[in-house]
Length: 423
Image (cartoon, rainbow, N blue to C red; front, side):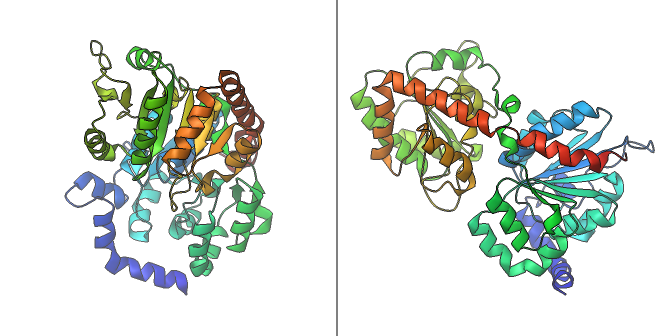
């Protein structure tokens, strides 16, 4: 009954959903949201297996990257389509999974949009990353003959509270999944509480802890020159309100240390202009990463990272890292594995529920520290900067934490291989 109501509500809601998903005035986005942005090349049949991999945005692409890379290595003939909810996620997918046949904005979760998309692809396997529990994605893909798996599955306490209101609808959707591959035992319990069949829920760990995919590419020479000048604090994936905290801490650090550099990387690049405003208001000289060309050099000790795909590399040059999305409730924290894998002491805020497992491990290993405000951030950085041996030891312990947590990709692949073995 709830699914019939859900589908019925899509008819009056469709214009609003298209507007909210960026389709107004953009025919290409509208075609993508309506499931008609991609069609088969001519009449030639697509190679099997055919995989549809879906992620919400940049972070979820990271959960799929190592898994899809391994599957393509084993089955290079695979036809792979990757969809994301955001344009930033699509760009991240293009960089992280270049072998995919197409990288598209995802169709809306209504049958009118999913029908053309599924008819064109006829997927053998559909992979859903983390928390993307769109009911029709599951139900209509199963109806089209696809096997289905949730990869790196997680449900935060906040999301679980919302999902319980539509449990009958999600129960029907989760019953379509061949596997729900959860990150932790707690995530598994929440999937079970929402109606996932017990025999199909497996705890496989976090696929983002794959060491091969966490290893960063070398820095381009211009960034390398900036990062080599003096000890570097990297504030990565910051959210609104957090840049001001970082800048306040930066002022304290500059008073304590003659030489220290800052790389500030907002989570979403569309906020770069906003962050520039904060820097100008604070009268802090800065250089944008995009301005560091072949002949340009950094003119300050502050770098605003306004380019895609370079944060992971610059973490490798950090003396200390702060990871954002964690100082205020509602975001759950961004990836702690990236700086930790680079062997960097990692600081983060108290609201890190999406990173709970690795945060606990870093704290237990004395490789990470919780900071709540500018004073605590400056204090934590100072503690590492004035004790070089402990800073290096903490960075080593952070790397060991990630190495011990690796293995999620292998466990995930063990369950996925049988789902495409018939292809």
